[in-house]
Image: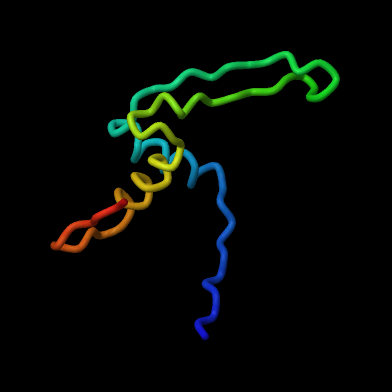
Length: 79
């Protein structure tokens, strides 16, 4: 059985670097602030990534990974 990889903490610099890597590959999506009343103070903030061409936020992680590592000459297939 394989041992799990050690998890590294993610800092602000890591997040900023990932945002820079993916910026040219994704369309901007709106942020919606919802007044959730007593359920969430000061409100609930939603990032509407279902408006990406893929219909999901998962494209952010995939592009971040693929732009941050060496891609094999054979390429990458995702389904």
